[in-house]
Image (tube, rainbow, N blue to C red; front, side, top):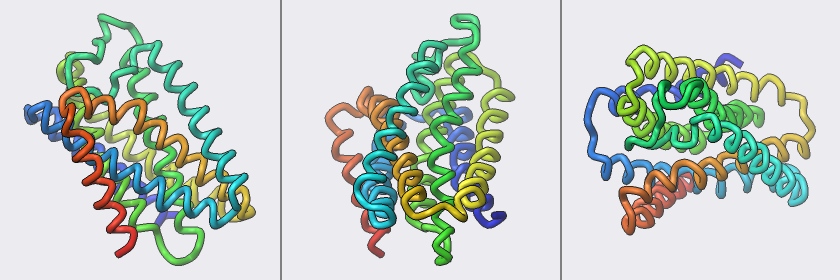
Length: 246
């Protein structure tokens, strides 16, 4: 369980690394968008060739499809609720995030939204240890690589919205810690789960991650990268695919 927590914390720490860069350095928005597109491609590959494929091998098509659909539904419903409270643009680096004075409670909504984005990834990292062959290096690498642009873009947007350093770095540090705890829970709570349940839960996380990429990461990338976003997304996809076959 502690090994699972360590891997989850490592992957989650990339959010804090990205936040440090995004808050302290004025990275051009085009660069942020390009990195976000690359991270989107990495996650798309991880969902396709690691999570969904593994779920199908464990439990077959029905648990996989049902889990992925439920994950997408739950994530989307929660995302809609948070968007109405000011967290719609939580990953945006531009001036779209509302300040607390513009929309009361938006800071809390952004924090909850960031947790919503990170927990499924961390649970899967912990669950990947259940086979006894060690953690899935592809999953950890994919989450780490994608977390850097997420933290970078969101922290840049928080800075433009006038949020303090204490809020920004406190938020991402807390989420990194929660990522470790969620990874521990993924290992501890699923240790005795039957293959069909494990398949459904893995696919649930995959569906939630896929929805997150489509709802929050790709729109941010497209806003500033425009016609180049497809190219950098494919580059990220192929990089993660190559890692999974190494």
